[in-house]
Length: 500
Ligand SMILES: Nc1ncnc2c1ncn2[C@@H]1O[C@H](COP(=O)(O)OP(=O)(O)OP(=O)(O)O)[C@@H](O)[C@H]1O
Ligand SMILES: [Mg+2]
Image 1 (tube, rainbow, N blue to C red):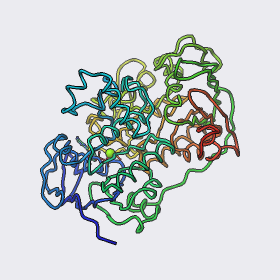
Image 2 (tube, helix red, strand yellow; image 1 turned 120 degrees about the horizontal axis):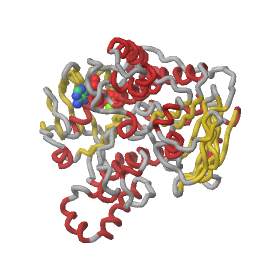
Image 3 (cartoon, rainbow, N blue to C red; image 1 turned 180 degrees about the vertical axis):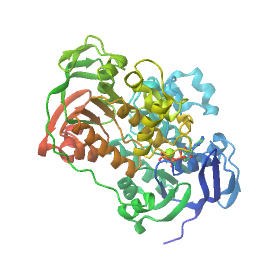
């Protein structure tokens, strides 16, 4: 076998943010035709490293070499020119523009024509969309798409610049297995055409499926970098977190009164005649492909999205109006898929974000007691090991996974009784994921009912008592007991005519 050429080399890269050494003298290389996985706990420094390569951030020390020559990546444009493309962990496109406009933004040579010729804009957009297997109308505004679809648009855009090096930061974190498989086939083609991929993911089984090489970071330090055959999942976890992970066990509890019922809920074009119920102590899953209406239903139940017909009953009482304020009053909590849009106030501190949905309960008179605020939030910060140097810094500066943990903490702190979790472990590392699974189980033991949307079927299967399967806006199956199996659920998700 001939020896593959090194394409990118990072030499002694250090990056310090106020109070934290995000990268500490990190060196490794990426070869041609290599899918190089970058793994590590939340806050380990993966995104920072990727952003340095993509020209979004500058290293404080160290060199980057491309084809053996030291290069200077000043901004994202120069990264693009050097053939480096990236799909960011947090969506970086423009929400108010259409899919087509986002795709072709800054493709300057063509821009003039495109402005003149709208048909051309749409047909070019369609070409890029079909490459990533996305069947959507390019005229739709980006903000109207789900996170997974937005990520695929971002991937289509990155590919449209025909990069040599493609960096994917948690791109599969809200994709189901079908879309992930499609992504993997794109990556394999990209690789066989000589490309290199830097692949960041907390889904470790995916890493073993797709990667040739693994680099492990921990607290900004390089722990190991070796070919995938040198690792097993256990060994990898050991290197990432330095300890064994507890497996979540099925709890045995009694399921009691009904807390939530959804009758014939419909919203044109998004979901149709949906019926569901949820009891105290129950964890009920909603499975389905990206775009099947899972998130839209959850948003309608909490009152972020309206619906055309049907009704929602909370504790047996039909709700005349549904909006987030009433839902919080009804002790309902919602952990949204899109934490930047609905979950967090990015400019506020970790503490303020955690306490936000509990202010009325904790401080009914309207005066906030800082000591109580600190004590209450500290419990959650420790429970979730939310890593940050200072609790009073804006959550904007937290790593993606740590931001997700703050959203979880906010709703757990609110002591709600009905929870809707939409991809609760999206972008969360293995250790915190098992903590969150245990917490979800504990919540039901204390009487809460939980609706759980997850793109990871193993998560649904290990946690849920019942599972609704959605396809194209409709519930196509309800699985209980022994029927809750991966193959079963996949069959319903895809419909009888598809191969699993
Ligand atoms: N712009 C910034 N300002 C201040 N601190 C930052 C900034 N960006 C990242 N950090 C800090 O640098 C550290 C590394 O963050 P990074 O986003 O690289 O982690 P990560 O490995 O991508 O984690 P995750 O798995 O949660 O996405 C974290 O402690 C984070 O809080
Ligand atoms: Mg990250």
